[in-house]
Image (tube, rainbow, N blue to C red; front, side):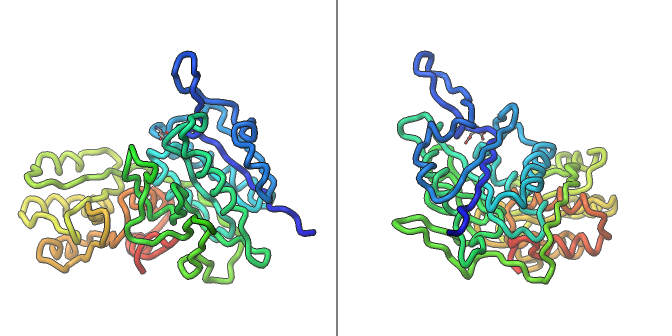
Length: 344
Ligand code: ASP
């Protein structure tokens, strides 16, 4: 008999781990090691499950890079012991967190599935059960003894997405996430349908997991809007220690052609601040130089964010800044797909 897959559930906080106190009506965290009491169906899955929980579960709005490292360290330390990982976080910043984790692991060959829920596990109409049960099932799925998913995914409401392609789109619907520029990796219907050609696989011979935990959060996001003033853009230049700026532009990467705007952007680049052009549109791609309104940015040496999401641009910027890269390499790596996060 082959050994059952061993799955580790890592609980960090968020709505999913809450139960309603029916006397007071308030939501409170419950002891996550008792998860099987709340979802006895988990015992029917063909895998063994262990859980580990943050000592103090947090709302995902309080996430920061120290917590990213904490999550990644749990996975790195247990990597050889388990066949797959399910990480539970609040949904609000799940796309940022899971993207960051995707960069922190090079040569990942096991599933790391992020999930959460819109309603607490103890709520009668909860979406937590399905999200958790199917995430565990996906994490335990293998083909010829190899895990089917060998990357960081995000599962919500019947779909597994590549985590670093996702965006939270609804604070109301159970379908809280989307991935506009990359189709779902798995769709859950009567069967679990794996979209095999879309799954990430290692290209090189190198198979050893590399864990990188140096992240640098000296970055900022600047969203353009018609009428934005020089004063506002210039104020970012005054941010001490700033190393990266994610510029959310319009459409296919367009920005004002006004002289002052290009001059200030040039000053960022002279100060060795990396500027990345990311579109405000939910879907589609920056095409740097396609219109006159982006050719100025191209000549200045602005990095082409292509079809990357803002969440992933933030994570990738933090990750690449943590590496000791020359300016040329930084730009080249940013524009390359490292974990399937950007169009090749
Ligand atoms: N505020 C919660 C969080 O992101 C919402 C959720 O869990 O979905 O932590």
